[in-house]
Length: 175
Image (cartoon, rainbow, N blue to C red; front, side, top):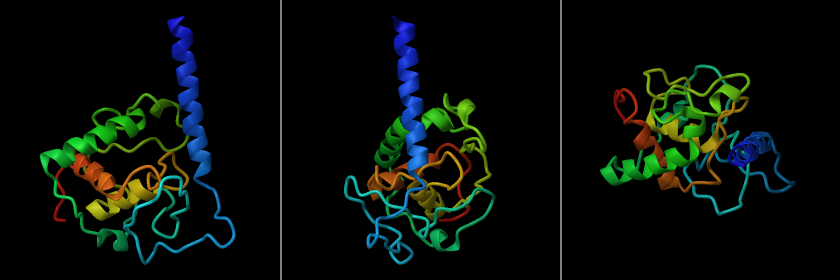
């Protein structure tokens, strides 16, 4: 009985993940498209799903985002912020990135194509500033399993995750 339940739970989780990946490529309904290039830091009302391609969603491959790099983290990396970021990371990120951020989560092996990033090393393929990391978490990375969390998390929660990620690997040069 337990193994059937575990298998069912795994199938449900994989299905939810696959649906989330396929939903990333959606288009806006006519008249609802809007440009985030001007306002990159904003909150989303629940259920307000839209594409952030203009704000920074990008193809895979090493690169930086000069505009995103200019974003300054408005949330101090206090023990409370880091604990909040860890709680969100544990709930939303460990299945792919693993408990210690090595990219070895339970779902990582089943991901075809590019594997989840190792968040504990010094290599930040999409830029290493807090603003670039924030933008990647918010918008996701087109063509990879990294979905955006703009519609699931509030702005401060995204920054809390950035603060937590900083505890997993090397410290940034300056930010």
